[in-house]
Image (cartoon, rainbow, N blue to C red; front, side, top):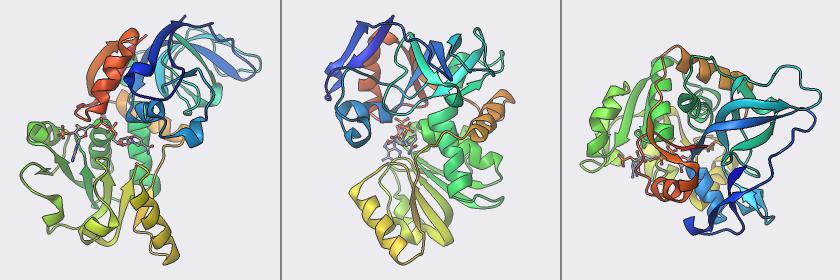
Length: 312
Ligand SMILES: NC(=O)c1ccc[n+]([C@@H]2O[C@H](COP(=O)([O-])OP(=O)(O)OC[C@H]3O[C@@H](n4cnc5c(N)ncnc54)[C@H](OP(=O)(O)O)[C@@H]3O)[C@@H](O)[C@H]2O)c1
């Protein structure tokens, strides 16, 4: 089978399109024939070696943390899946989905309605579930709350704006001029075009700030928070770590770092909202698996409007 692997950390040039042995399902595992694997910023952060503490130094590595596909075979002890079913799966960072086939624990797999396009399924986990968990599990979203999504036109931002609206919030979105109409069409009530105004000058107060763009922190954005407000960070940085340590010391949790966790009921919620048509999936570009280098280069520009996919 064809796979994208890396034999060392580095730039897009370390991505190799090679022949690898097809995996065999172990106990409690499935082998999935990939339809689409999503390219997320986390993948090129792994490729660059920024997550070495998790991904280690063993090579070769296959990148990719989410994919949709068809079950090819099931291992011993698997009772809830059979070959031929359409599924979606999310993995950890250590072995990936950029491959014609991949194996995975059945715990990380979700059935798709037959009517759901495989492309749409690629927005369930890293963008959909993260947005849901940021808003609900960490932000404690309630109807009528004021939510700010900084980076509203990217993969995570698109899902955050829509999910916050579904959950009854008033939503403001920060994006560049070219994406103003698009973010409006997602349901955002107010748009801040960051090329014309600085959100830090705003008089508004927010209960939840999702900082997808990564340039807000307690130091510069605390004044944007309501009394019970919280900034949710999705990227690890020294500033965030310092602020997390500081606020935990004084027990006023004004900032949180959130990493997506595989919780099946959250996956089901996002899948069902997509299936019901409440949550719309936006695909920016689909690349062939062999063109993974181009896909990474594009993702690294941080200009994507929605998901970037690899077609296996
Ligand atoms: N913790 C987690 O579990 C988790 C999960 C998902 C994502 N993330 C992280 O969240 C970040 C966003 O991910 P993503 O998938 O949404 O990335 P993405 O799709 O590549 O985001 C691209 C978007 O970022 C916007 N953007 C760039 N600079 C901006 C700025 N200064 N202000 C506002 N918007 C800006 C761009 O909009 P314009 O073209 O309009 O500027 C573009 O639409 C990444 O760093 C990723 O690693 C973390």
